[in-house]
Image 1 (tube, rainbow, N blue to C red):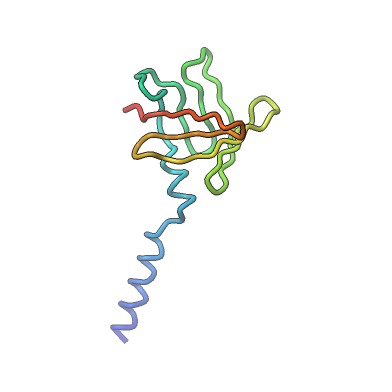
Image 2: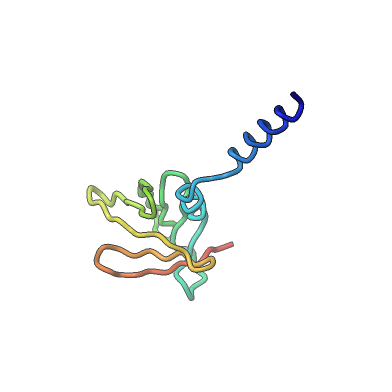
Length: 106
């Protein structure tokens, strides 16, 4: 009985510790970002919004995350960005093939 309980407890702990790839990718987005090669922060991402912190006043854009893409709602227009990472660099590619790279700001 004790072995069964330990096995069940271990399974539950491992299940809780494992995160889906989508959740892991999305959580890597959270933070403040600057254009690659620049030290000035451009935007910040939290769980439901992207904030252009280099604007005055700060502009908040809502987003949806699905798979490896982020859909941003720009004043009634939807912009979809394919998200990937090269080490700690955030790579965003739109449907036109334009690629932008961002580095975390600490």
